[in-house]
Image (cartoon, rainbow, N blue to C red; front, side, top):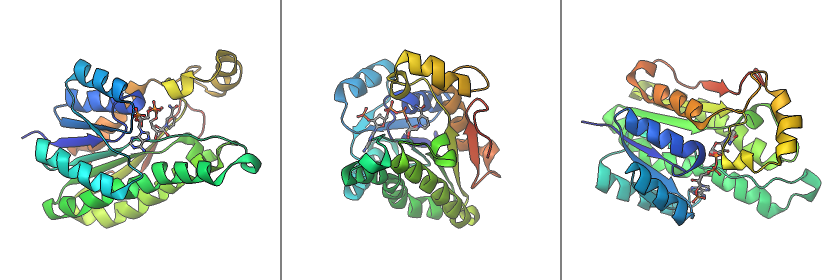
Length: 241
Ligand SMILES: NC(=O)c1ccc[n+]([C@@H]2O[C@H](COP(=O)([O-])OP(=O)(O)OC[C@H]3O[C@@H](n4cnc5c(N)ncnc54)[C@H](OP(=O)(O)O)[C@@H]3O)[C@@H](O)[C@H]2O)c1
């Protein structure tokens, strides 16, 4: 029987590559998204992966969405917490709304998605939770106090939960991508990319979403059963912890 994988923000960017790679590896995949129906429907058409719309910052919406996915595909074995947003501003200009939206999506979203699935994973003695954090949660980034705080929080969440899940066959790991060539990053003016960002990356290029997806497929596999609480830094050598 195929395992079931649920990818938040799985309809575009890094999440889309993760959904596609997990499907290719034999999982039944559900891709969640927030609101971009057009992109989600195009993704579904192209890949055959079903898409489900809810907001990961809303606990009840997550519980209801997960129940629908499990009714359609079966119990979720692999959760990839990938959905994320930025609301960048220098701290002296950052509004409470910018802070709150990023924390509730990028950090509380992990609680909202993992909590409804956790008891079932414990009962079945198997689970994989893979959290997509960021290089900027490791090193901090000016203009991103909200994002850096949330992404650093994701790493603490990962390490604490890994200890709770270990005896129950559940692994919890994080991936910290560096700059990956998604819409989020390609929206940066080309001059800034070429003159300021890429020169900071020792491999001399942006990462590809598929390079993050391959890390996820490995962490989801039985081969990775001894790896828990860890952080994979996939950043082209830009930052070493
Ligand atoms: N790109 C990078 O260089 C980079 C680097 C480090 C870390 N990351 C992290 O990697 C993850 C994916 O980034 P990306 O660049 O692929 O982002 P992206 O292209 O902007 O896609 C974000 C995805 O998340 C979904 N989403 C956003 N808010 C949501 C919410 N409240 N509830 C449910 N889904 C929501 C979006 O849905 P809609 O399509 O409906 O909007 C979309 O599917 C994020 O956590 C990001 O912080 C990215």
